[in-house]
Image (cartoon, rainbow, N blue to C red; front, side, top):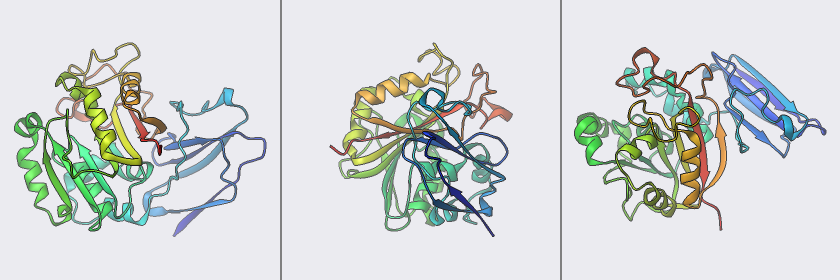
Length: 309
């Protein structure tokens, strides 16, 4: 059984937002500008969408007024997960531990927002034990490739055993293991990429003393024109900048925006499915320290794009 949603923008409306929510009223994306007149989206009930609402504001002055964290840049995206993404997330051979992590990470929304599909060439920096890399591998399929990068510190301190075990899974046959430092995170053959992911780790590159400008330029070179640099991280409080990257594992969003823009990227959109306005942002969001609060931090999701020219 499926739910049909038809988006029709009134001629007077300039800004529209779509909510596809499960347990909360948090929208997973918004867009402004051109209308989605008569656009039909089929939403499988397996996605668990309990409510769907469409709202349009009248002027740019009120843009995003109903959103928990209004985006500064429009995001034109569908809330519908493709069959490839649904199959990846719902694969019966995924581990129970990964399925538990799903509750706080919303992988279908993540992969959909960043437009991941079969045949793509993608990379994940700071792959860790490979939770996101496996989802990417399943989604891009046998005609695609995933470069999973870790540096020496992450491998020696946290990830080596678990990463090796995951790489042995059949689903990971299209994953290339990359052991490199973050300053130059990808090998020469990792080029013309469709997307590079850095999930919940940009803040860690700060206290690990990475040359982040160099890292961001390297990602820029590895992407094809129009390619996406996908960023997710724990939100720091206004004014904290990079002062809590090691103590609370959080970073102020404006810092990330400014640093990545310096490499030549354009901020093409942001999503709000990981926002949590109730998060006080004064506690340690590291998975080793968060305890029962893991997966509830306020997180920003930013889509940076390498310009076509």
